[in-house]
Amino acid sequence: MKHIDMNSLLEEHKTKLQWIGGQHAKIKQIKNILNGKSADSAMFFAIEGIWAHQKLMKTNIEMDSFLFCPECIYSEEAFHLVEKSLKKAKNVFIISKKVMEKISQEDKLDGLVSIGLLPHHKIEFLKLKKHPVIVVLDGLEQAGNIGTIIRTCDGAGVDAIFICNKKAKLTNPKLIKASMGGVFTVPIIEFSNVTACINWLSKHNFHIYLADTRANRTYKQHEYSGNIALVIGSERYGISKEWYNYPHQQLLIPMHGICDSLNVGIATAVIVYEIKMQKDGSVL
Image (cartoon, rainbow, N blue to C red):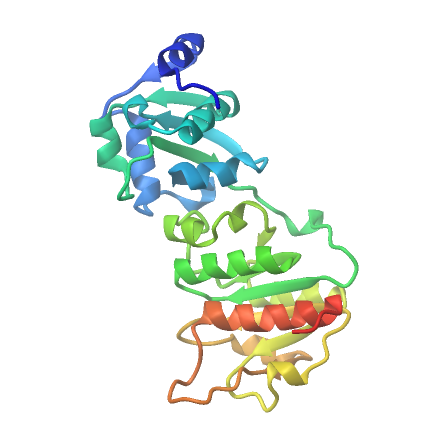
């Protein structure tokens, strides 16, 4: 394995490196992003640690800034990520351990923090394969739930996620973390309103399924074929009324205990995998 020689690495890239302190504007920017105070329109997100950077390196995500603390780089794994990030990042900064401790939200300091730019997908450029599956999130409020659903969609091979009645920032650190890298790869498209989303789905011949606890048929009692759109509603308010005015089918997950329903992230995973297993010809 390659020996860790931080001094040589710093010397090699000295013209690109800049030492900054805790009052620097970049530190304030990272704190705002990690605390959910940044404007979502800018689409800047922040990640920290070895695992998150490994995921980022596997994508074409634009890396705006990379900050690292040489004192906290203990493993060869982290050292190699520093090497890669120095080449990939537009801006590179060195920070002290004291500054790292101030901005870190992790129990263990890996010495790596980055600001990236989430891709902005537009509906007119969305390319779908034959008979795609799309998950529509209508008014979901909890960033962690949205991130979990994005992770599920990545794992199941869902073609895209549509968002209506947006309530949470895509750059929310809880969403980024819960998605486990899925937010970097799954096309996510926002619609200004439910009607616009429905019109697009109707135009492209999608069969619309509403996850609704009042449905008369379970998710197992449907046969999924063609273009599929699964609509998941808000944790508190459910699915918007507009959806029920258009052709659709309702489905539910049977509950055999005292609870009325599953967590929205878990429920989405159950249904999405059933749809994908059926369409892919797999058997549970």
